[in-house]
Image (tube, rainbow, N blue to C red; front, side, top):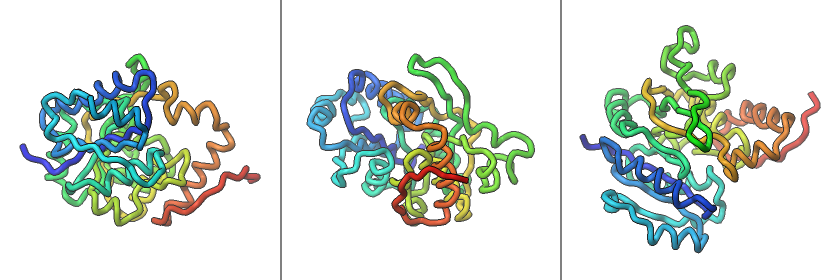
Length: 265
C-alpha cells in the first residue's frame, strides 16, 4: 500500500534519556505495517544533538530518514513543526514527539482514511495518555464518537470545541496545503496552541475527523518536557487567560503577538 504521508519528528536538545526515548519513537515508525514516505527529523543547531543524530542507528528505515536543521532560531514546538512542514514534500503529514510512540497501524489507517475521505483536512487519532512509566491515564478524542456529542458523529465542529477543550492533536494527519494556507500552528499561543489550531480549522469549515482507532501513545507531563514546565510555572489564572485568548484568536490566520495580562473580568 503506497502513501503520501511524511512523519515530522521535532527535537531541539539532548537530555539525560533523549537517546533512549528517541530510539523508542523511531522504532514505532520502523514497525509500522505501512511505512511513511519519509521520516523528517527537525533539529536545532545544538552540537550534542547533531552528534547524536549523526551516529544514530536508524536500522532498516535509514533510507526514508531525512534530518534538517531549523534555521529560524526558534526551537519551540510550534516553530519546529511549521519549519518541518515547510520542508515536507508530501501531500499529507503527521508528527511524532520524540518521547511518544505511534501505534503500528496508524500510518496504514491514515492512508486508508485520506483516500476514503479526501474532503477531510485534519484526521485525529484516539490517543492513549500515559505517565513516564507507560501507565495508562486516559484516552482522548474518543468522546467525539459518543451519541449527541457533536453535530455529526466522528467529526469535530466548532460548537463542540467551544464546550470541550481537551481534544489532542498529537499524531494528527493534515493536508499540507490547508495547513500552510491557514496559518499553521501559532508560535504566540503559549499554552493553548493545540486548542486554537483546532478551533481555527473548524471555524474555516475544514473538516476534522477522529479516526476511531488507537493511533498514538502520548507521555503526559514527562519530567523536563514543555508541558511539565507549564505545569510547574503556569497558575490557574494564566491557564484561563490562554484558553480565552484561543477563543479570540482563532478568527485570525495571522500569528499575532500576545502578551499575558491578568484578566479582571
